[in-house]
Structures are given as C-alpha cells and as structure tokens.
Image 1 (spheres, each protein chain N blue to C red):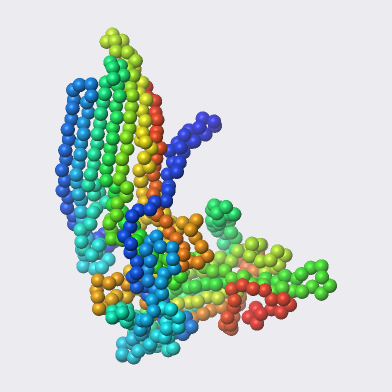
Image 2: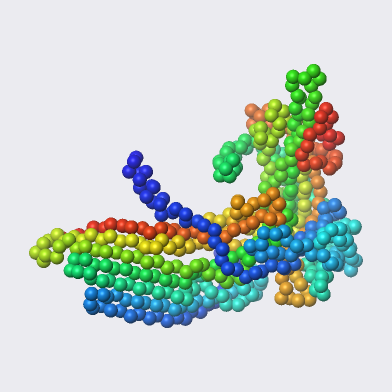
Amino acid sequence: MLKKTIYILAISVFFISCEERYFPAMRDAGGVLMVDALVTNNLSQSYVRLTRSTSFYDVNAPAAVTGAVVNLIETRGNNIQGTENGSGNFIFTKSPVVGQSYKLQIRLNGDTYESDRVTMLPVPTISNFYAERVERKEYQSNSSGAPVAVTVTGQELYVDAPVTTTLANYRFVARTVLEWVYVVPNTPIPPTIYGWQSLYNSNTYNIAGTKQFSLTNIIEKQPLMLLPYNTTDLIQTGASVAGWLMILDEYGTSRISFDYHDKLNSQFSADGSLFDPVQTQIYGNITCTTDASKIVFGFFDLASYQQHRYFIKFSDINSPEKADIRKVNSYPAIPDNGKSVNLHPDWWE
Amino acid sequence: MNPHLETDYIPAQGYSYGLELMAKKSTGSLNGWISYTFSRTFQKANGQFREEKINDGAYYPSIYDKPHDLSVVTNYNISRRWRFSGNFVFSSGRPITLPEQKYLYQGNQVVYYSDRNSYRMPPYHRMDVAITLDENLRRKRTWKGSWTFSVYNLYGRKNPYSVFYRKDASLQSMDKNKTQYSIYKLSIIGVPVPSLTYNFKF
C-alpha cells in the first residue's frame, strides 16, 4: 500500500501547477453592434436592445447604443416603429400578426441593418404537463467553492407539445415559486408567515424541436425543472412547504431560432477540458445592407408566446410518482421572493 | 453511427513548402548535429454556403503548420569513462483560435472567436542533459554496465499542451454584465524530471 502511494505521488508530481492563466497578446477588438431582439404577440415581452461588443479582456459592461431608428417592417410594407424607452432599449406599441412576415430594420449612423424575413407563428399550446419522481446526481459548490457531488431526489416536471406543419420548435422558460408557511411558536397568538422563493432554470436555453426529416407529431417528455424533496436550504427553518407554483413561458419559434439557441447552448456548456473545446462561432440573422464588410452580432427572434401556470403539491414524498398538479388560470405578477405576515398574497394558491 | 458522414465534412484544399538543413560532426571528443527545418502548411475552405467557408475562403495556417523546428544534439567525451550529452529542441507553437470579443445576449455573455488559427501557442523548447559513467572498459569482461544520470526538461519549461477558455470563478460577480472569462494553458510535465538509469550488456 505504501509503495502504491509513493508511485501515485511520484507520478502526480509531474502534473503540479500544470494549468495556469494565460494572457496572450490579442487584437483590441470590440465595438461591433449587437442586436438583442425578441418580438412576440405579447407586447410586454417584446424588446430590442442595442449595445456594443467589448474586447475579451474588458471587464466593463457593454455600452448601450443610442440614436438608432428601429422598425419592424411587414411584407406588405406596414411599419411598426420602435420607441426608445431607455438607452438603447426599444419597445413596440403594436403586436405582429400571426401568418405575416416581418423583418427588423435598424438605421444607425448612416448604415442600415436588416434581419432575414421571419413569419409570425401561431400561439403555442401544451398537450400535457406532468411530473415523475427522479433521483439525480448533481454538483454543487461547497463553502470553499469546490464542487461536491450530491444526490437530489424530487419530482421532475415534463411537458408535451404538438408538432404541426406551422409550428415545430419551442423554447421554454420555467420559473417555480416555492410557497412555504411558518407558524411562529411560543407566542400567545402565533402569527403565520407566508413566504415564497423563486427558482429558475440553468443558464442554458430549454429548447425543443424535431430532428430533421422527422415525421413525429409531438414533442414528448421535454424536461423543465426538478423540484427537490429536500427544501431545507430554500425555506425558513421550521417552515412547511405549501406547494410549488410553476410559471411556464412557452415560445413558438422558427427552426433558425432553434438552431441559433442550440449553438448558444453548445458555447455555454464548453467548460474547458484537457483537450481543446470544439469552438462554435455564433452567427445571427442580421446583416448590414449598406456595408457588407460590417458584421453584426445578435439575433432577431420573432416568436409566438403563451404563459401557463400550474400548482404542484407533493402529496406523499415517500410514495413514487405522487405529485398533484392543478392548472392555474390567473396570471398576476409575482415578486421573486418575499414574506407576508398573517395574510397570504392575492396570488397564493 | 452517422449514416451521412459526408454532410459533416467541409471540402478544403491546401499547400505546403519548406526547407530542411542539417550539419553533423562525427569525430572528436565533441560531436553532434544541428538540424533546422522551415516549413509552412496552409489550407482553405471556400465552399458554396456560409457554413462551408472558413476565414471567408482565404488561406490560413493549418494545425500542422510549424514554421521553425530546431534540434541541437551534442556529445562530449570528458574522459574514457565519462561522457556528457545534451540536446536542445525548439519548435514554433501550434496555431490556435482564441475568443477576441464578447457581447451580452438576453443577459448571457457570448464570445466571438477570431479568424481560424490566427493566433499561436507559445513556442515549445526544452533542454535535456545526461552524464554517463562506464563501469569498465576491459575487453575481456563479459558484463559491461554504465550509469546514466539525466535530467529531462532541465529548466522546467512549462510547454503548453492545450490553450482553452472558461468562466473564471474568481472574477464572477452578481452582475452578469461583468462575468469574466479567462484563458488558460495546460502543460504536462512542466518540471525537470531527473532519472538514474543503469544499462548493461553481456
């Protein structure tokens, strides 16, 4: 055993300090126009943000681009003009019409930037929403920042969505509001505290689409989020879980949008490894029509949108596949987290 | 198994040229050789579609492009039984692609890479030395042994094996606008490696 330990230590010596930060001299790039545009049938979701790119070593936030004229141009020539409501941020006062094609046009400093034409898709729907008990190994950072493997048991939420000739790709943004209740003990009239905490998806995009040449008519079992049984770290000590309110934003997107976000996911998941990572250059759908040599970053995403809400309660965590799900048909705004004493919020389920 | 492998390949063409030189001294107490190779290898992918174009269809250095490759090998007979040998190698770093710019898209930082292979890793160089003691030189002795003490990578050069980037945990902040990536290089055997060898023949 001692000999084996010595051999392992001797070999390990060769790998001491073998990874270090490296500062190559690079071209001072940056300043390229970046267009972050999402337009949906819901005006509150629609925006266009114009910024500039920064060089790799620059630690400052990207600069906003002001003074541009932004239009959404329909095939028939009707314009929906964007209104600047903050530095480089634009909103629209009219929604696009399903079935019509639009392109985004930006005029800035004598140049014109236009996107490809995109057709407004029909409002997306969900065929089925359900949960299944799962046990999964995850890596979480401990107090010193080192990753530690933990086994998480809970209910994984899934969704099925229909595939039609007009709509075959989706993107989901899931937020879950964990509702908890705490009765303060050892008081004559114990107050009840109603608290809530929001949980979000990971940093990658949750996209769903069919394989090329596929004949399927449904997207099945698209995972959304894992609701853990152990909520000790999420709620007040001594509190009990009242349930989970899932707020699911569903976007119906084009195939090009699916491919773009898929490439973004590839880039976000590249963590650096022993071998060189496969680089994925991200190209958007916007070009400069007045100067072909100018590159533009970003993407014009014309998507249909619908929000769904469900209330999930674990009836028995010791019994497999036991989650009661109820659809919620009211859509009030809910803060990220908070507490209320003796009176639960209006949206409380 | 990929039944349509041809759809994952990009047609390309390339060319190479170079020059090899060598000078060798075989006699005397001090002998050895010096060799130098200059070689360039370029390729281009200029397909019909944007996905089949790399660097807008212009020629760029291939991953095998190694402009300079120098080797110096020396042997010195200190005495009848003691010998010293050393070698020095130097070669140009491999071409690499680095992230040059970044931007924010829907709150996430996205990097934009430079032209393919427009940068190079640091050059590779290393010096190894060895000293050998012959046990005996008697012709009648059947068993002839020698001890060699050598040091590989004498000055502990951390020659990079790979260069990559990832999010730097020490530079993360709550503000995603300021999420910082860092570039890292990975070296293998970046320390001097001594060894003691006994050779024999009978």
